[in-house]
Image (cartoon, rainbow, N blue to C red; front, side, top):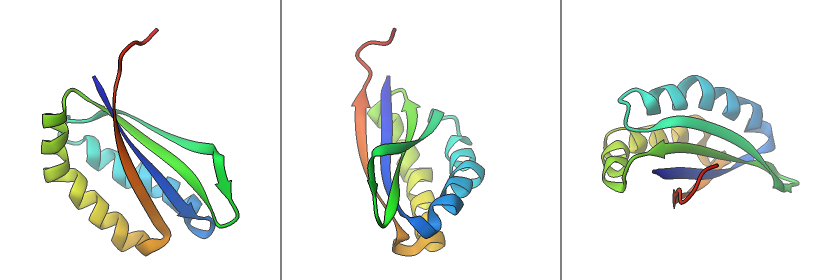
Amino acid sequence: MLIYNTTYQVDDKDAENFIIWIHQVFIPKAQEGGLVSKARLTRILSHRNESGECFSLQFEVESSSILHKWYSSTGNVLNQEMLKVFDNNVVGFTTLMEVIEES
């Protein structure tokens, strides 16, 4: 099992709308095809700064090939939509993690 994590830096003025948009638009569209699952949005408390907030959005995915298929068909489109909505007021970077153990 893999975790696909995207960490976002969001301008303060857009933080509330970002959370709403992620919940109402991004997550439902991301999970439509069933390639990614178990969405989790968190606020990163250790990276608070004067100009914005940080959030982490995570999905579980079975393999990197499925993730590639999802990104090619859905993820890239959603990222372009996010850019149209928030312009450069939201920036993010992704991390792919492998689950070694759960308890």
